[in-house]
Structures are given as C-alpha cells and as structure tokens.
Image (cartoon, rainbow, N blue to C red):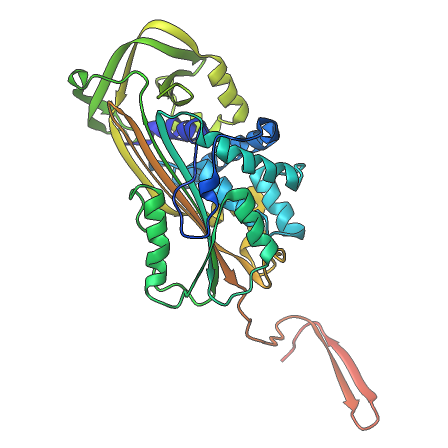
Length: 414
C-alpha cells in the first residue's frame, strides 16, 4: 500500500477509535473491570474532545512531514491518552508546554480528568456489535519512589493499575510486552526492548484494539484483481472490494468522501479521496479539525452508489515520537530541564513510542495501537571547567584575603 491512504487512515482512527473503547483485562490491582455503561455525559467536555481532534490532525501532519514517502498509521487517542497520563505529573513550564502540544491550554485539570474518567466508560458501551478495547497501565521500577497522588489519579481517572517490577531482570521487558500483546489481541507483541536501561524508572502504557464488521459488508465474490496507482508513480496489483447501494457520500472542490459504518452504525471508517492530479501530501497539508468537520458536513445518503475499496494491511512503527512532539512545543519534557515534580524527582520523558497496525477486508476492519511513555532519571553530569570563552581571574593573598590582582580575559594573545 502507498500514501494514497494517509488521510483515510488518520481520519479513520480519529473517528473510529475516538468512537469507542473499553478496558482490557489487566493484572491484579486494576479497577478497570469496574467500567460499565454508567457515566455522566455532561462531564465529557466538548472542549477536551475538540482538543484531542486538533491534536490528531496536528500530530498526523507532523509525522507526514517526516515520513511523507511512507504509509502512515497512528492512533491519536492512544498517544493523547498516554501523554494525558504523563501530564498528571508535570508542573511549571513543562506542564505548559505539554498543554500547548496536546491542545489543553485553557482547560482546567478537572475538565481534562473528569472527561477522560467519563469518556472511557461511555465509549466502552458505545456499540455491542463492535469490539473496541482500551487499556492503561503504569509500570514502576521496584523500589523507585513515585508520588502516590500521581499513581492514584492514573488509577482513578485512567483506570491504570500500578505494577511494581524489577526492571533489572531479563523477563521484565517480556512481562510488559505480554500485557501489551494481551491488550491488543496479540497484534502488537513487542514494544519494550530487553534489557531495560538502568536509568528507566517507569513506563506509562496505553493500548487500543478495535475490531468491527461493516454494517453492510462487501461480497467476496465481487472482489477483483485490479490496478492501483501508487503515490510513487508505480502501479500496484490489488484486490479491490466492490459494492453498490445506500452510502453516505460527500464531495468538495478537491475531494470525494464516503462514510462506511461498523456494527450498529456508531463507529465508522471515513474514506477521503483527493481529486485526481492532487498530490496526497498537498492534501494532507490542508487538513485540520475545521476541514475535517467540513468533510463530514458534506456527507449525505445516496441510494445507489458504487464503492470500491482495496483490501489492505498496514503496519507503522515502532515510531519514536520525541522529535514530532518537540516540534509541537513540548520539547522541554525530553530534557534535563523537565519538571515532573508531581510525579517524582529528577526525571524526564526519555522516549514516547508508538506502533499501529490495520487490516481491512470484506468483513470489516481490525486495528491495534499501543503507546509507551518511557520515563528516566536525569543522569548526573560530569563536572567540567572549560575556559573557552571570556572569564575573570583573581590573584589573592589567602592568609589575609587580600585581592592582589583581578582581571578579565576577553581574547587570548599568544
């Protein structure tokens, strides 16, 4: 597959993955099993949803700048959730920078937290015909002091249990990876490498798994072998699915779009096709939350519409998101100047890792994604005095404390 489907995949995950999630089984100590359809809809802030949507498109466009010649697939919700968990420990300018990147500037903490607390059980009960599971967990190096309030808010708001683990053991990474594998129905089986570096004190993990059948499936006998004009100028042989009937369709000056619902219709895949001759990367540059809303507003049901969509599988990552997130304004979080004092002392985000996979066929779609925020101690710096710039000097009598000479060297003449 090629870059023709960049906006399709981004919009799919923005709509579908934000459209439903539930907790996955986790280790002992989790209260995720308490999730049910009981929630307060009024506490799901539209401002928080709007912030996550803006972040989705901003993040996608940033990655497209870096990987514009590749297929791209992310779960914005997974990234947002893992970072929102980490955000609970940020303070000062680090918190401000993360808020800017995530779109939380102007949002009170209580708004962000109550929204996530109610959003998860709401999405959990969205559609009993769609399987969409979200799981969160916090893994702490055994013996490390992480502030209890930070762990409590992640447990109560994000349903994330805290698992204390001896990171020095060879099987530590395997245990974390096993949790991710179970949370993604074995679609993502490895994210953390062994051995875990000695400075790593914590992992904050989010995992999402989605599987939904089309509300109106494609008939396999109508799938044919045909040509696909790839973004690199080559022609691929693909298996093209086809169906005709009632479909929500929209178009604009430079695009066509369809909405393909799953299950009971509350989650859907939106496919957006730029007009012929318009480069996909140029179209991606025009995407933002407002444009996304305009695309959705253009949709209307058509009685007889032919839809042809290739079957495809796509895998993206493991992608290190540090540079992308720094470009969005939260670079301080990755440096020794990071302030995560509400989490612990002298720590910073060393890596934000993301991986996603998708398979689309006649029956429906299966998608999985995981995001890991790795937190490390700030290493002690080697002391050094390197006089490679102007400096002062003093010559003194140390018995009496008398300053004998004092000077400033601005340039060196030898």
